[in-house]
Image (cartoon, rainbow over all chains, first blue to last red):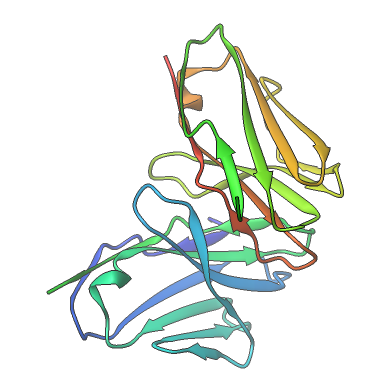
Length: 110
Length: 111
């Protein structure tokens, strides 16, 4: 089983749509969780950290369910500029050792 | 310069060549990382340096040799690579927290 598993997509949605991505992780000792965004042929950039209580940043909402070892990202009112690959990232505890999912491709069309 | 920079941005090399990738971070961070990103695969952590000391070597073949002379600079020395080593090599840095900031990467092609 992969350490971090994501549906690769692609997700094709119209502008203004709401889209949700899910991610599961296998190691119950995982301590920190993140969503990164990677544009085509660019480096990954931190989108948001994911906290146990859930957190929101504008149109983006992240949720963590430790019991089910599941992380989600919700994007509301999708913009064309949201088109990218969204990477689910988990830190298992060893300093700086991040494990990345394969990424979910999102395309927002007019 | 700001953030994390990497040179060269593109590199083509033969299997018998020796080359080096360079990374520099201008963020005052104390940890630096090398990652490999191959097509259709997740990012793979290769090496971690914390305060210039290597704290992680993720079973990377010896044809990849990292060097961290100080907390702002990180090198990846390459020799006798294989075509399957062709990938995007990303450098990242962080300070005390796990959130990492990435450089633009070096796209490596091994012929």
